[in-house]
Length: 638
Image 1 (spheres, rainbow, N blue to C red):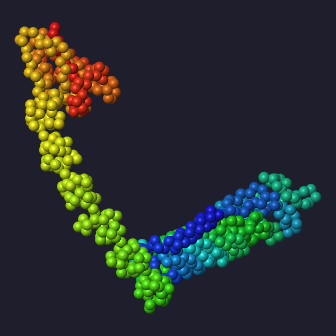
Image 2: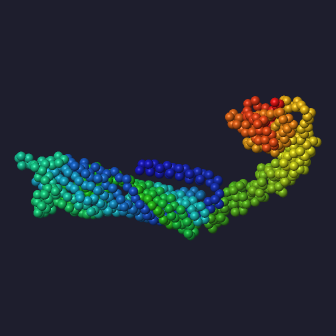
Image 3: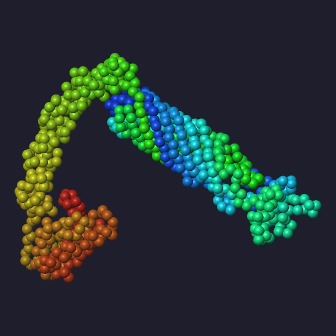
């Protein structure tokens, strides 16, 4: 319970700080943003109906300690069940500040709580004194669970902090949180209790009786006035008859004895304060009437001063309610809440100090110098005539600002901090191409709208900043560069612009192969190095490399005594083992191509070296083809 009060205290402190902040910074809040809350009066009255459940967390007195020399005590802990609550409260409230979100309220809260309190086992044996001042052992037991039906009537005064905020013209949120001061709480109960009163007498040699405190009394030396004993010794009449006879003689014994009063009233002696939390959704059904629906939680601390407690006292017919055994109780009620709120309108509806008959804006908090109308931005133009009521502005612009003084007010100015012509919505155009700098990707160079203000000097449809040859027209596939000789190599990469040639040879044609018809040409005696291109990360040869391999096939076809070694290499990127396997697969692909062209496979050897002995060839070409794998073909005579 202490934690609940601590949370309540923190909520009150931060709530007040929040309210003070909103009031101190009121100039930051637009009356339009809080239109409904500002319109509503300060004073209201709430009527709430509540329905829900209840929980009890109780500390009970020790049952055994109340009995002298108790032995064989078997008394279970009482338990609550079937708890439910219903009730209503009426509160008056007043909301503070200009925004009128926070306020205070108090009223009257009535809760009616129904529950059951029961124990499953009741068995106690203790020392007592009978009507002849003889000491004996009294046994009090119950053969069935003892249950009390309890009705609690709880009258309280709630003192709460109120909050409200309209989400629209009809829907809003509201909430109460605060303390509940209990004025009265009484409990009506009725019980089903029945007890068996039995006795055990232990006689001494001089005819006196003493207390037998042993766990199992002696059946030889003790007089057992118990139900089981008399049913054995007098089966004809039974224990009930014998107990009745003994009771009439003055002995405190009886079977199935009911309390003298099966119902009664009980009021706890301590605890009169609690915590109430109630969040709700509100809906306006009329100008001054709102309905709300939500939830409530009420926690109260109460209890009694019992430290030693007897449910069934020494005398037959006596009974103390189980409620009296509770030392401390935290009662928590929770459920749904349905309510109605009514606001009281005064002669000054908006509370700005200007009476409604003199107020030109009677529904909005305003200033006296403007006859009750607000000037939120403080520019001297009342909000109802201000086209920009949230921003300080000029009268010539109907209260709207023009920060860059270009004649275009800020709310229509795309560049409010830079002066520009009205036709460009207040934005400057440094290069004068008719495209405002905010949209111009080349603001210092005149350009075309189709290229976002950038030029296309060669008119090839590719803006200069994306054109590799901005002074010469060329197609998009060559990034704006021409291909003069039509060999598929753009001029910026073509070393022979007037002669067609493959990319591998920088756009230049290969020199024709010459043979003397008898001797193997000198260049075949040495390594014949060529570059074979493949698809990225694959072993499939690109068609552009077919002519290169075909020339090798043509060269060796005239010499029957030649054998070929195809050695594959990779760059130094990647895993070494992977590179070695990959270079072999590409070399094997070249062999397959040559075999398909009629070469003898037994005369072609294939090896994969990976990145070892890396031979990059022509570096410029390597850059163009992005580090493709290189192949070295060795043509050797027998």
